[in-house]
Length: 161
Image (cartoon, rainbow, N blue to C red):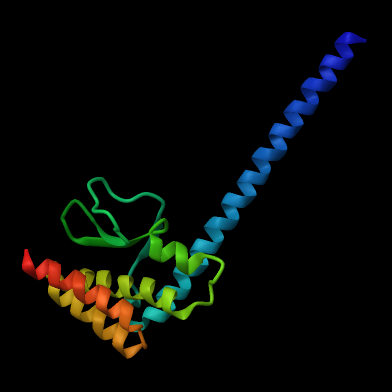
């Protein structure tokens, strides 16, 4: 009897652990699907400037990335751009993916970051011009004054260096 009770207890514990693992796996899959949908919406909003370019999500920033990194170019061994990588844990991306998914301004921010990196992918490493493309995109698409000010400040800090 004691042995049967122990086996039942072990089976119950194992079953609970498996249920928790399955629930966590479903949650993770749902977060990944939500992130992918957000990325697709941002790419669609970014429009022709990113058409045909490979854009992917990353769960971690690259080694040595600055605080606040939102996206970057992944380069091949020949140093040519291979992919635009969007950091799905950045504040901008998390806000665009969050409860207020329908918030146009938050999605616009992510799209503008993709436009910035797309400029680099097609034209090179000149940051000031990539910021110009990002600002032009935001103005054209009704970016908030707060968002525009933030991008302009980032551009100015870069120019001051």
